[in-house]
Amino acid sequence: MKKPPFTVESIQSLFELNEKQRVPGIIITQEMGQVRDYFTGAQHLIDGLMIGFCYQGQTQLKVNFTEYTANPGTVLVLLPHTLIEPLAVTEDFETLSIVISLDFIASYPEIGDFITNDKVRNNPQLLLTEKQFTLLKQFNSFLKNYYNQEDPINKGEVLKHLIFALITSITGMYNAIPISKNKIRTRQEKIVDNFYYHLSKHYKQERSVAFYADLLCLSPKYLTTIIREQTGKSILIWINEAVVLQAKTLLTSTDLSIKEIALALNFADASLFCRFFKRYTGITAMEFRNKK
Image (cartoon, rainbow, N blue to C red; front, top):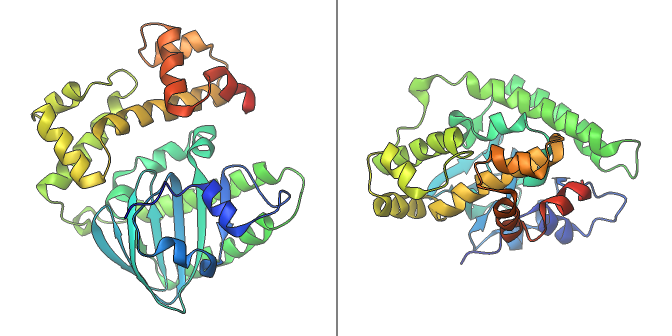
């Protein structure tokens, strides 16, 4: 059974955080007991970026249909739109989890490099040295304590910079992984990897399945089937969500007009872009910009 997308808002509702504790687009928690029943026995689509640090105990889960076991000293990095299925969690399992929303990512474009990193996507489980994990655990303790404060000055902005520092540190650890130690990929997984690569290069200009199929020397039907089987989502959803995320980034981090954004994303005119944006977000582009 697949549950609705696992979002920052759904986690906040589980914990019943008061308004003074909530930070738009960010949640940091160590209270696994409250989500154990929600997590187990179902598939979840992560609608954001989730980073989990295993402090004690063990959990087994499938990430995009591949099984992993997380032990103490392990970091799990679940990129946006990852399909996860928890299989087993020990009673003593303890983790600190950080979840940030797609809107948060859109407001901090530098994180885009992390979520499109091939090593991160191909290695959702990262085993750290004792020194590395101890250092991150100390950092996380400060991060969690700051998050739990009520109404400190510029709380959201400070957390953005702290999380960016954490992601920068984790990126360095991923970049140190020798290519030879990367997981051997099946043909289907390589097709997905190559699709992600081409999508990251061309999504601003190309939104047709036929374009990506041609780059991969595959039929559109076969590519569509492989992407759905391997990721649990249709190829059109992947393409359109990449466009929406970039549109949100341009709306929040630039002063480009709606017409200029439509041109940058290869829409024939602003009205087509506006209809596209509202269809996928439920609000107009201007409403999204003004909300921010």
